[in-house]
Image (cartoon, rainbow, N blue to C red; front, side, top):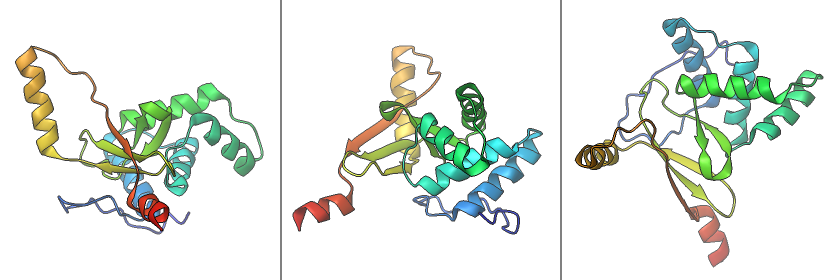
Length: 168
């Protein structure tokens, strides 16, 4: 991935559906790390690149296998899980809880909760951020006197491509 020559650009489209070039998103992650005073190590960057290249939720052990092939040496599960924890803490990656897999966040510069639509047929996922849903959940939690520490919203179904393929 040619990320060194790509200029990071935060997305300013409030209706964006996350259609960004992976190299530009990795460059943005590198820029954000510099601004935040944290390091995007080689392994962390490689994991983020692999998640972008995958195009669908990817498990830690799948990442380990690809890293072993790419780097010609094994990487232990604790090392990969630590890297994933870092990437999640910075808002670069989200965990799809229902699949125990990870996806890159399209807008790490926004630091917002997202919801995911996951295709049960092909495994593809789409990340969406909608302030109305965030506000509704916050209001419901406040009405209950509940302090939210983390939100996970996943909607599973069939994507348009798979629906069209099954209709044909």
